[in-house]
Length: 215
Length: 47
Length: 223
Image (cartoon, rainbow over all chains, first blue to last red; front, side, top):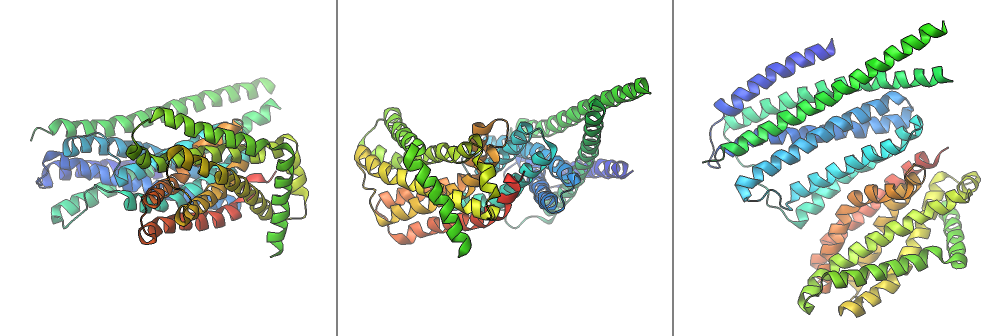
């Protein structure tokens, strides 16, 4: 039921967002590639939201010891990782025409890459632990430490170097488009997250049943 | 402004990424279904 | 104060057993010097380029050496079933963390105290300066705070030695960046003023992760 509503909302929002990104939003001086940014920024924001959910769910797990919170954390981390990957790729595609290179060690690129590596490690380590409770505990610890590391990474790398465009006074139409786009991706995040979570919980239940039957 | 290709590429990447992810999820779902069937059969046999 | 005393006892235990086996310090020391020598082969250049590369080489070496020595910190305990004994001691898990952390800190600093002069000699740079020592101590503290936590985590997984580096490097990336930048400035003879903002970042990292690791450590070794 919830999933159907989310699916409807994200479909409608996606259509509106596409209209706004390609037709409603005015062309800026950097030309047509600038339109990438309407999807690039929401992806980044959602990735961050997803990892924040991981952080909160990890704390909740260590506190309550309910495996449900581990399902929350790992599902959100997975969606967050997908969004971070897309965000890195679109950023790279934007950088090529704008800066002439696919990659540069700019502040935000570097910090996003580190963020991405932290959550890759999160999943690698999950795959190394077979016992459910231990896996949940360890990944909660990584979920907490990883998220706390993010602001430090960002501050450090800003001190280090930056070439990223700063957001200056924007056309109200640009702002509106960006807002709709963020709303779209937020809905999409919750949709994917809910799907993954439901599946994860079924998986866990099934595994427990299987273990019980094999005994 | 001949950068339309890049815009296209960026959107293609987003869609391709999301679809791949959904594909992976569907595959997992199928695996779950198979497991459930297996469980049901085992249960039936044991009864 | 009592906690600190108990932690010092645990650290002392590690130091004592290390003086008998010399397992960690000798291998990490040789490893560090080998890494420096290999870097020298990889980047042979003029004196000027070497000076600009020196901070990077130094910190890559120390980061690798850190992983090597931190890995040992818990593998030994686990293999000889000492961890159970340690956990049965009438001390909190937090105290075990502090003790192991202080032990590793001591080993790392000991190795660095030998490697730094060798490095200075081989690269013809002046490393014996107050800013550089401050940077080294603070960054090493950062390495061991987070490294001890992850080392205890890694030893309980299937892949053991492989887990620590993949977790450790992304998390310590900010202090490696800060340490490299700050040491570059220190080697270039810059004043405290410009170095201090980097030192601030490293110190903040140390404090934050010392506190966080202190509290989450008990979740990593409970069994």
